[in-house]
Amino acid sequence: MTKTAILRARVDCEKASAAEQIFSKLGITVGDAINIFLSQVCIQKAIPFTLTTRPHLNLDNSSLEEIEARYADRTPNTETYTALNERPTRRFKSAAETLRSLKT
Image 1: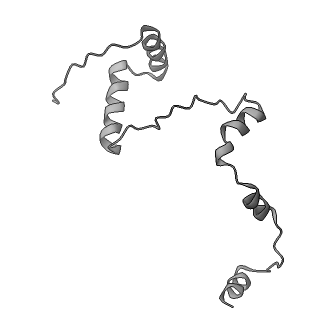
Image 2 (image 1 turned 180 degrees about the vertical axis):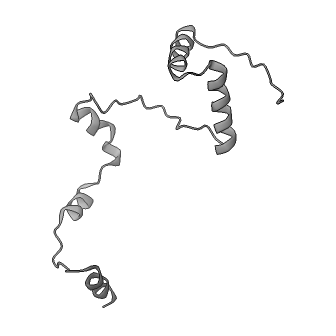
């Protein structure tokens, strides 16, 4: 049998209660959840999720303005946007024809 350790941590009561309700719906205990977390840390050799200072943005009910503001630093600049929207001056009938054109 595997040895176990007792962990003690101070956590926010409301968050702990809310998490316990979610774990219950999943059919696991808080201890199971902690073991899953620790297992993933060991497997990935890192925190198993992205740590960020950005608040969560729910894309299901966010306005277009909120989404654009959130991802403004990830959208192409004007030059890139223009290049992405240019139509190719030449069309090819097959992949082979496209590859041949790249060799010349």
